[in-house]
Image (spheres, rainbow, N blue to C red):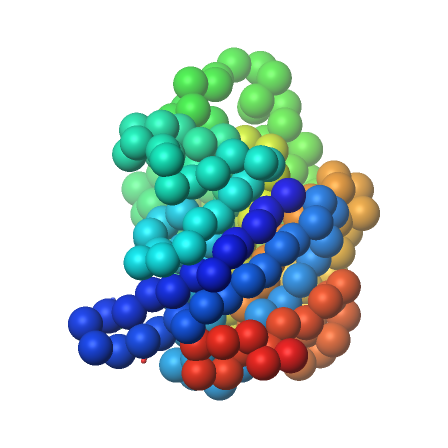
Length: 217
Ligand SMILES: Nc1ncnc2c1ncn2[C@@H]1O[C@H](COP(=O)(O)OP(=O)(O)O)[C@@H](O)[C@H]1O
Ligand SMILES: [Mg+2]
């Protein structure tokens, strides 16, 4: 599904990533752990095509990212990649349902089929009853679960999550974590999750430890 070859990234004289090789198989849930400053978020941004490596390449579904023009890359990202961040980044003036549907509108899809799929996702994620509410009217757990539904709406090949439960209490964190594995089972979804949550990391198919810009385990 995803291959990263020899990824290097520096910010001026700070070498943040020092040669990362990584492959992710379809339907795998992997975690990336490591101390703050190890380069986890930088790696996730590069794997997710939001940032470019200085050296190295990413292929997703056998398509190389390096050769893509900005428009092509944006369309590719919209279709193939989902993101969940530590803070939900839902747009405050739109309802939860509208927030979830925005990536499908951007991708040129609207109509009954996609709104039915949004309903299905909202039911799976336990936010269907709150679909007409604005993000500020939802709990932190509901906001994060809506952000997961938004990441899923275009049926992406892979979802990248950067400390998705970092801002949740343990009950809501555990609920969110169980949803990742439910989605792996029911939709065959692939996830790469950066986390400080040991319990979550231990539940994933593979745990990758980063230290000082390299994969150490
Ligand atoms: N845009 C940037 N400009 C300069 N330095 C950055 C930038 N992004 C990250 N860094 C630095 O790169 C290092 C790794 O950061 P990051 O990938 O966020 O680590 P982690 O997510 O593992 O905590 C840190 O020293 C951070 O300060
Ligand atoms: Mg980080």
